[in-house]
Image (cartoon, rainbow, N blue to C red; front, side, top):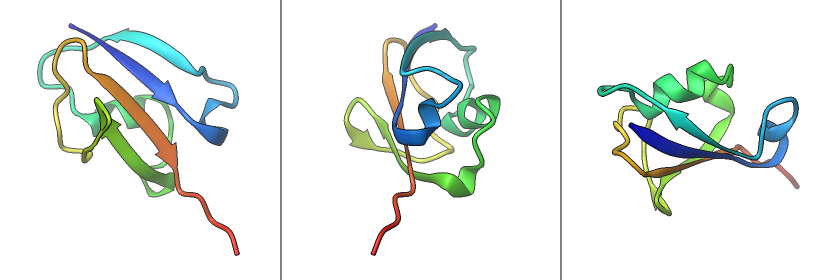
Length: 74
């Protein structure tokens, strides 16, 4: 099945902004983050179709997964 993966801020460096991925049944959001080589502790917000989600959720066909880093500041 296909999903769209969107990366934000510095997660785009040496990666991509938006890509369509083929994933297998049972693939979790955490599996996708791991495959991207992103440390889970650096993830601030995960969204599927503009709704907050978690690493354990399994996307459905045609979902849009957005991955945002933790943003610090002062």
